[in-house]
Length: 574
Ligand code: DON
Image (cartoon, rainbow, N blue to C red; front, side):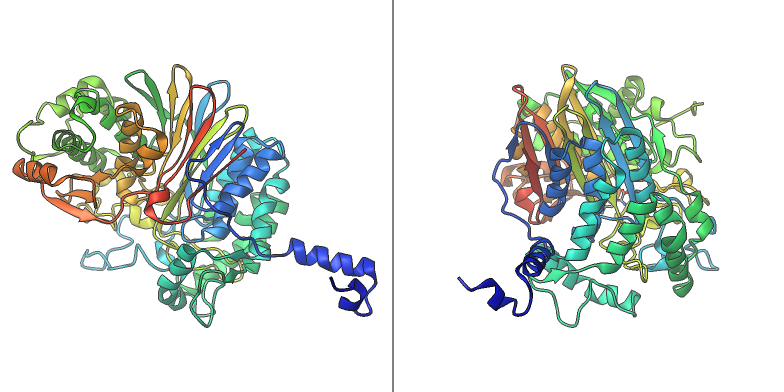
């Protein structure tokens, strides 16, 4: 062992120790190894990245509750998982407190005041290719920071600064890139360079390799302002000024006033039942809750368990339910602050039983023959999910997004964060599909200050009045059907959580009229039978990326990160 004073030359031993401490604390963060079936007694955090899960876990262990951990994870993901984790995007949180009270917070982005119905159309009324998906004009006014501030104000226990701090350290001290993160940054190198000619932390001279360290000093400074000033650290002052300057540089339309006016909203979550279970899900402006409840009500009408998981009979019925549900979505769902969304009617038994009446056991109904259901009386539309349960059994289910990978690919100059391209979730022109192939109309047309329809489906399930399952996923239009299948796998097919998450999935969304199936989801026999019923099948490599937690009858928590579909999904528990 070398002599200390020899190593540090003229430094005193005390100064040497200080430097050593600095070197130790400033070492970049490296993700740990995954566990096959994560189990925990007290609390658990399941996210798309090990370092975000660990940030949440540290907060739980320090005496924070699930809401404190939510804030820590949301900000940590913005650093370690920049393709989807964000402060420049938005999302939804569905939660259930230990005493059984349920709630939800909508921190979805809003259209800037300057955006209207024809924002993405040329003078002939044609959609301008790429404008709603890429560059400054694709961005909605971000909601994540206001969402976290409000959630923490109402339900947090630890000081705000303490729950924001882990993200600051990750950004400042650096994060060692996993293979998936390095690949991802390389994949979007060209697009990120084109939109950020001044350079960003995400692009360096050479391509990234696993083991490289990503430092984000500008993002660290932005997070420090959020830590010190709360909401004002993002929607006013230096960050707002940098964002407005970025908009000017790229001819975007988000103004300082749009930022000042942004407010997350508390909304009543939607609740429904499936057999003995109670399902708590997100209300509009997400379509996720309505669609999930519709699908589960339809599934209850058929003996899917007896027919078996992913057999032709089961897949046929699920597909027929899905095409009808997505047709309703296209017509009736949008921001309830701007459009009267007939939620009660289209989730009612009476309406739904009528809707399923046209399902034929021996042939598919072509999507062109399906329209939305009849509603006569209108009553007075890249992402990441995380699930958290604390030791008191508060549960929070959050899906948050920039929409596409790295959103609109604009990184706000000097502030270091990606802006979303959520404006593409509006129906930019009736009948014209968005990047997920979804169509829509009046309900989801662009209006200033309106929220774009979402498919995000953060969900919580109770069993016998107790917390049972916390679940959600990214995947654009496939979010709804991915959550639906994992819920069915656990509740109907009695699978363990890891099996339910790993099980191969399928998807149908009315238009296009195709059944997508993950490689290995269907046996050859099931494929032949489904084709005989008229279904058009298309193989895809993967659908969704679940992050779930299940409470076992003895109270133990089981983590369900989506280990089998690549990526760095990770459960941390204690
Ligand atoms: O809100 C929505 O429905 C979409 N913006 C979600 C996008 C998404 O999941 C992309 N990631 N795979």
